[in-house]
Amino acid sequence: MAKQSISLGSSANDGTGTTLRAGGDLINDNFNEIYNLIGDGTDLSLTGLTLPTATLSGNATITSIVSSSAFTIDAANNINLDSDTGQIIIKDGGTTIASLLNSSTDFIIETATSDKDIIFKVNDGGSSTEVMRIDGDVPAVLLPQNVEMRFTDSQESIKSDGSNLILKSGNQAYTIPATDGSADQFLKTNGSGVLSFATVNTTTAFDDVTAGDAAVNVTTTAGNITIDAQGSDTDIIFKGTDGSSDITPMTIDMSDAGALLLTGGKIDLKNSGAQSVIRFYCESSNAHYAEIKAPAHSDFSGDITLTLPATTDTLVGKTTTDTLTNKTLTSPALNTATVGTSISHADNVKALFGTGNDLEIFHDGSNSNISDVGTGKLVLRTDGTGVDINKGSSENIAKFIVDGAVELYHDNSKKLETTSTGVEVTGGVRSPSGSDLTIGRTGGALMVAGGDAFVPTSDDAFDLGSASAQWRDIYTGDINLNNTKTRDNEVDGTRGSWTIQEGADDLFLLNRLNGKKYKFKLEEIL
Image 1 (cartoon, rainbow, N blue to C red):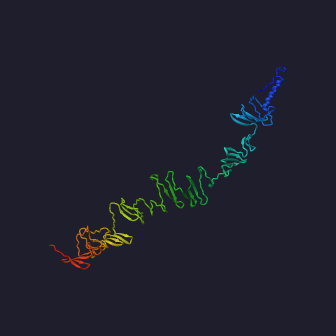
Image 2: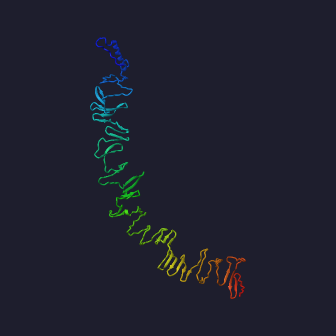
Image 3: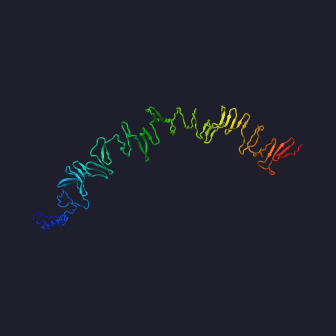
């Protein structure tokens, strides 16, 4: 309902104003609407007050809200504070306390009283607790003791314990010193998160240096870099990681006068343009050295390998006179060689002579061989008294005497000797079993000299001639026929012993078993 007004007329009692009764109705209607709006229709009350949409023009002021209860602004939707000047002023008893400002859409909260603070508090377990203060006197943002400023979560924060600033990262808290250190000092931790200033020690013990995850450079702009293991017999050890395995590639052994121990099995000695060298100094104040130098680039045809002996030995020089013992020379070219004691060849290692290696001398593991594999002759020549083949130094096998005999021995017993007239044999001459023994002479008779008989080596075991090779003529004295030793005759199966002898005019037959004598009946043919 719009506000109803009582017309007063143009003048008193001119009869044009609202009557008294009608004016009372208007007054009652206006109060009823007010009581219904801010009361229960009977009594006024600000509790649950709902104001309709209203537009205030000019400097509208609600001068006083009298109530024993709090003044509540409650809206079913947004509560909009809209000031076309961009400023909302907060006052207390008419005194400006603060204002909310719009500055080019920047939101400004500004106190009005000089050096006064903006304080943020929370209800912490029922207690009003200050968590932040914007100090108007300093100005500064102040956090009370043990109140954290967190980043993302509780594991990253900054706070003060009243004496020190505590920085937390990754849930690890570090206490920052309350006072400054000296120039060039650094912060270090005690392992429990307490930081303190310390002086850089140029001789820091390396057992105090922990492993990192980046390269470490030790540099100096002047002077030397010294690594000094001062403990008795303590070594300098270099370690690393090969793939995923820890290795110790180098150790400087102080218990062995600084011997350098390398476990990698290879040293690459490179250079900046000169031939690489290694110098080995003598024991007398390093007065002299022996140098090993790599060949020049022009001398190389490829990489080479020098293999050292597997036993304790001394390397010999190319221009020195040295003694080589038990050494293998592969394809050596010896112009003149003097052998002190002996030259040893392994089995089947040949001593070769001649341009085509025609003469070979070697041992095959079982036998010793002298082989002429060329097209000429194997000639044994002597200008001495002869050539002997011996077993050891005490038994003869063969002798070839200059201008004399050739002697052949069996078990150091001479069996054959050549003479100026022929050959002398001690013992028999026989052929191997199953083979023929052929004795012949071209252009003359085969003669048996001496007083001994020409007999077989065993009794009644050999034939004179054969069915396919008979003697042409037999010239002999008596003929003795005897089969009593081994076989019967083919006529009556008996055995006998007979002798055929010659007479002046007759031919006789003697029975050697019974002594009977017979004469062949001969008939002369004219």
